[in-house]
Image (cartoon, rainbow, N blue to C red):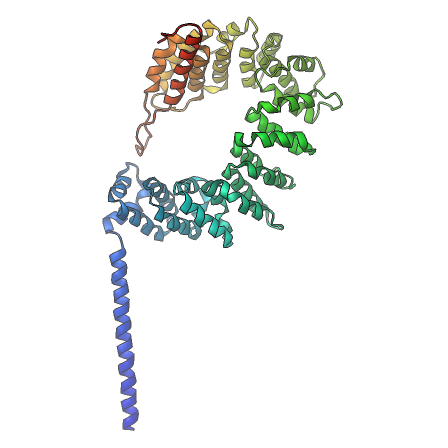
Length: 475
């Protein structure tokens, strides 16, 4: 009996000792964690980044350096999606590559973060190769949630993996849409053929324009491949998409192919032929004035095609387009005339400058398509009266933009037009505009000189034109 009691006492002692050791170990771990935790005031700055209107919290994190980075990452544990997105943006600016893995972990752990389409991927891209390796490794491990990151973060390096994922059968529509968006994000011409294959999917071809978007994102880098597909693919839908691309990016190598399709009398005007005519009409100095003039004499199937014929004739620099354009502009009920106004400026019709000058509202309509494209058209005329009109408009209207619309299309069109017209008298005004600063409403960012590059380019174009006219000492 005594031996049993002694044995029980021994067991109790062992249990108590183990419990004590466990308590000590737990306390040590808790102490260790407390030592790792950032200072409370710094952590509070990290938590409040999402509502940091004055920039106070951002500056406190920046000033803290590595400790600030640790505080932002620590705050990710609270799984606030807004704090994660804004915090990632700040970490990208601070440039500590060790932050890439915690950001990706937070992205995987908090689904709401993935609903902010491009903000986090572009921030993560700033970490370069370390972030790219982590994303590709995650995809290899089957973490398909990382697909939206792959294109932007990894660039062309993601194409082989995304092509492999696109080839998997039996997935839902959202899966293939995500692949298409990601392929566009790589901006690699090597993604084009896979995007064409995705476009052939009946459901995907009309879904949110994701394939169109992806091809546009690849842009001019894919120009030669767009032309090759246009020439060699027999699918009318695919050829129509390629026509959209060569038109949007003004791929002049496509002009002979477009002209051949638009001039093929074996085709009727209701399908691909009209699309080719429309795409070809967008090219200035396209060299096919006679083709367009013949088209204006034919019974085209709709207003869209007949407008393309007249616009193409004007963009060819043919004065015969002038009266036709004027008629169409004046009977355009919807104001659907941007391309016609630019074409009017290019058509070399003697009455075009005066017509566009009268068409430009002096006051009361600062922006909008009518103003923007009339300014563009005036820029194409090469007329001195046009230069004075555009400069007067800019001097009258620009001061109103200083506090509100810092990226106004009509102002940009006027600046471009003055450069194209070689208007030496505009240099002083452009120098002033170049140095106008804009500030965000919340004050988070410093001044932005939104028109600096554009105005600088216009001034250089004016001076270059002056030198060509034999004025080496132009202002």
